[in-house]
Image (tube, rainbow, N blue to C red):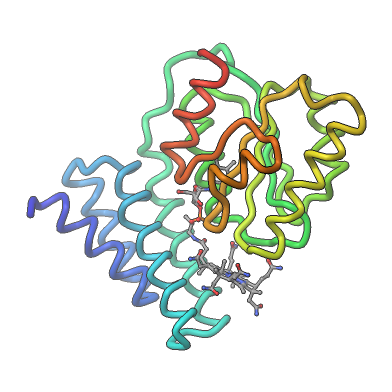
Amino acid sequence: VTEHEEIITKLAEAVSALNSKLVIELTDEVINNGVDPYVAINEGLAVGMNEVGHKYSIGEYFVPELMLAAKVMNIGVERLKPHIVASEQDISKGRIVLGTVKGDIHNIGKDLVALMWRVSGYEVFDLGIDVAPKSFVDKAEEVSADVVAMSALMTTTMANMREVMDLFRDLGNRDKYKVVIGGAPTSQILSDEIGADGYAQDAAGAVRLVTELLGR
Ligand code: B12
C-alpha cells in the first residue's frame, strides 16, 4: 500500500466515523503529499459515504448520523475543490442541465458530478433538488441545453425520471437533447427502459459519458 492509498483509505474511514476534525487533517495531507484531490474525493470521501449508507441500512446509524456524514463529506469536498485543476479551455464544451428528481433531496453525488463536469469544461445549470419534471424541460429549452442530467438516490424517486422522459416526448422535445441519469439505485438497464441516452456510476464516468455522447 502506497502512502497515497493510505491517506485515501483513512479519509474514507474518517467520513464513516463522522470525524470532521480528522477529515480536515487528512485533506491537508492530501494537498501536502500531492495526492490527486479528484481521487481523494471519489475513492476517499465518497467511499466513506457509502459505508455510512451501509451502517444506516444495518441499523447502526440513523438519520442524524446521515446528516452529520453529509456535513463531514462536504467539509472535505470544499477543502479539496480549489485544488482540482480546471480544464484550460475557456470555450464551453457543452451545456448541461442537471437536477435531483422530484421527491428526492439527496444532493452530494449530484454536486460532485456537477463539479467534475465544470472542471472538465462543461457549463452546468444546476436546478438543485426536488426538481419537478417541467423545470427540467423549461430550463433545457431556455438555455438550449446539449444534455439533460437527472440524479435519484431512492428507488421510490427514481420512477420520476420516467416522468421527465415522458414529458419531453409529449412535447416533441426528446430528440433535442441527450439525456443521462445516475445515482445509486439507477443503472444502464433503467436508462434503456426509460429511453435515456446513458448512465454513469460515478463522477468520472459522468465525464466520460457526456464526452462520448457529445463527441467533444
Ligand atoms: C447522505 C444520505 C442522506 C442525507 C442527504 C444529505 C444531502 N445533502 O444529500 C439525508 C440525511 C438528508 C438523507 C435523507 C434521506 N434518506 Co438518505 N442517504 C444518504 C446516503 C447515506 C448517502 C448518499 C450519498 O450522498 N452518497 C455519496 C455520493 C457521492 O454518492 P452518490 O449519491 O451515489 O453519487 C455518485 C453516483 O451515484 C453518481 N451520480 C449521482 N447522481 C448522478 C447523476 C448523473 C446524471 C450521473 C451521470 C451520475 C450520478 O456520481 C456520484 C459521484 O460519484 C445514502 C446511502 C447510499 N448508499 O447511497 C442514503 C439513502 C439514499 N437514503 C435513504 C433514505 C431512505 C432516506 C430518507 C427517506 C430517510 C428518512 N427516513 O428521512 C431521507 C429521504 C429524504 C428525501 N426525500 O430525499 C435510502 C434510500 C432507500 C431507497 N428507497 O432506495 C438510502 C439508500 C439509505 C439506505 N441504505 O436505506 N439521506
